Image 1 (cartoon, rainbow, N blue to C red):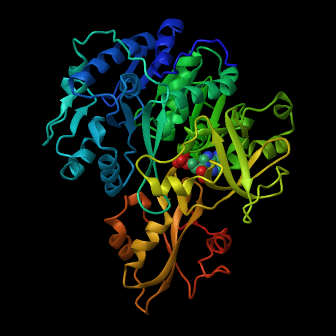
Image 2: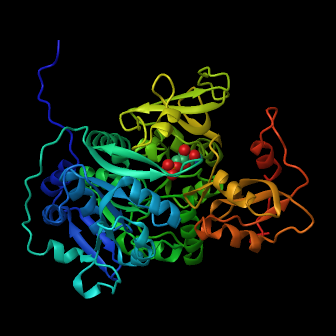
Image 3: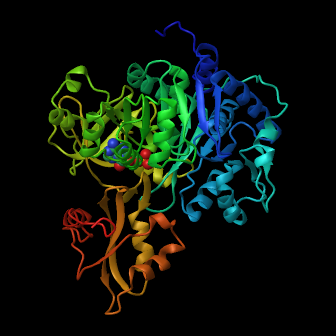
Length: 543
Ligand code: AMP
């Protein structure tokens, strides 16, 4: 027998509509590319979102169309999030740090019809334009006075909104309608698209709000340093209106001093981002001799939070919430909100717990699978590949059957490529990474792609790209190589040779010459052995 309750489809625009009505005091502060600080309430944001939805219609955007963004964190980007998906189209956020090759691939693969670009990123579009669809419309996210000169035809964001009605008849859609698209780096080959739905994003918002909300409280100021162009800024654009917390958007300025200044002046209580950002902030806190005023909580994810970082924050009275997730999980899978018993522990014991990747959120199931394909016990000792299942986990990749088939197991669980253990009390510990990717400053580099391009250099007989620990970037790529003959190429030669295929930050920082690469029993290069051998590696910059 079925229940007799209404079925109201879950919809993304309902979150902003709710905030406009129920949290009229809350809103957002943005550091703008124009150079000033901009403030608006959720009510104003909702009205501008309606104007933007009308403008999208005038540009010919239809339900299901992909509309891209290439922008920093700011109020216009948030308006795009809501207007695009609210009107039935799909918001495709693009990472400006991608190599030109990857950006060209994803814009063409997504078949974007319009791209909205911050003024800072206009040169990126200028460089790519000849490889992009000729009918791709470009909108620059500023007003007429700040429009840059471009060699290509470009529209002005504020002009598009001007004069449009401030209400919109938001269509009611099936809650499974696609709402957003975000590409993530593949171990091999091209980036793969996670295609979110209204249902998955709203459920993700509810599940994150359920665990983070009590720690924040209405009216708190929250700083997403995690970008809107990367996996929904960890869901904050949807969670914040639901909770009635204010979003403080840092724009392009994400160095330690700028973040400190913004947090201090806006009394940010909770800040969310990857460890690299917090390295910069901690250095500035040291220089200033105090934390920013009102700072009480930091959410760290994207890479493992180092123990020393957690300790520094905790010692200054800032609660550390160490979370784990993935683009394919919308992204939050586990959270580091702790029961009072943990927060009351002596520091070393507390660090032992906070260093782990936390416990699962509601709506996310975890299992670990050993090399023998068997599910492993959650005893804190058994290690295996981590698989996940849940309401906000991908069931495959956008227009990519091969990658979709590889990603899922026979029971429909998604393989994360992380190697983990789970303790009897539910704490996840990420032990290693099975996927051949290096994560530098929160961004991926494919070691296989690095190896393929490096091997094309005549001076290299064989090589392996390895991520080594780096104090600022978490990991940096180095190349362990066997020379083809006596004339070994220099690092600069090699970087020149590889430069055309990679963004500069993706190139290896060092070459370590060896006589032979260590092999596994099956004759593959043993990256595990190399990682162990390089565990004490001192990066040239910090040696
Ligand atoms: P992305 O899809 O770019 O968000 O990256 C997801 C991956 O980042 C995960 O599969 C992990 O390999 C890594 N990751 C994310 N959070 C953490 C964390 N707290 N500790 C260790 N690795 C993490």
